[in-house]
Image (cartoon, rainbow, N blue to C red; front, side, top):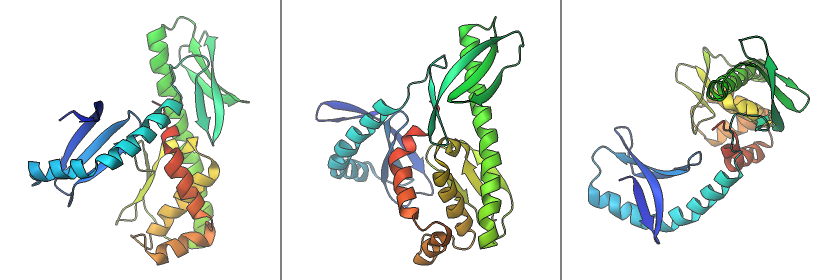
Length: 243
């Protein structure tokens, strides 16, 4: 199954069998966008068909939203004039010819300046720009999030072990039972208050590995408006992308 047809409209879908899934689950990944159907190992074809049929109204409603979001997402060609989000602000890519072969990157005013050797081909230039932007974002995210962890943990006083940074599609942070914290480095594209919310959220999971009332009470000690931050992230997460 690689597409659904609903009201004569073709909707791309990816099916993932998961040995850990306890029930059928349908979601929309906004980057492409596409439907993703997660099914337990022993799900029957009849169960899957019935589930999709019942979810048709939800699919129609949310597919329209996904298409509108996709239209708003910046279309990057990795050339002059591309726009990037950085701490919630918009930066414009500015390419600067150089005699040096090693590319460099920095923020100057409202520009994200990338230097490339003047003999770089268009194809190689796009690859170099994309790699350099990703490296820049990851490095800045590591600096900022480590700093914010230290700042907020002065209040919470919780112990954590390893802190790692990844580029995940749908998760912005996580906390393991081994007290390791993980953050999505694309958070650097979000406003600082959103970064702070995710930091506080994961810190509080060190004490409560759930989303109980006690957990949210702990979050609210330093993030009383956490509901607003959750809402912003839910509605705007599709913008925090480099694709």
